[in-house]
Image (cartoon, rainbow, N blue to C red):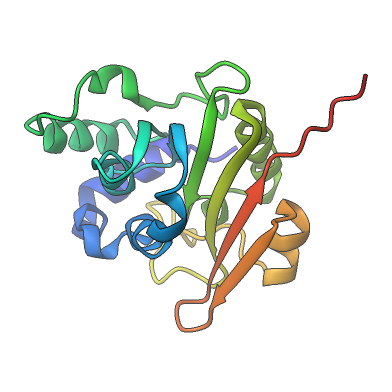
Length: 205
């Protein structure tokens, strides 16, 4: 498995684009999805939250979320906490923003009603994608919502080891087959696929 923590600590420390909200795919998708998200409520988790732009926006009072975020980069989480500590509504950030040390999410089963995952899965090796999706599914409530976005193109930059930052570049059909969304929208200009999925009750009695 690649050392994702080392890769993305380096990215955050050397590429200022990652600390600007307007460059955040998650921030953009959340803004576009507000008419749907505003009708949801409960605990939300942003997987791969970076410096916290989507997390911050979903914490705004027009939404009804108890927001959480996780990222493999401890540098990104540190920046997020520094940015947000001055915000009166941002309480208990040490509990709500967590650093991942593995692909296991540090939350109990069926904990979140909304999980978001923006521009993350394509940054993983193909062998790590299913494990991440399984963890997302494990922590989602039955009937919960997954809002996911992936880029279907090569990144414009390489990581510190010389590999493209988008490690798994696949066509839209591959992602749709993998995730089985209820709804999918492809942004042809950005080569970005946005997917919505609700967790079905697959338990048998």
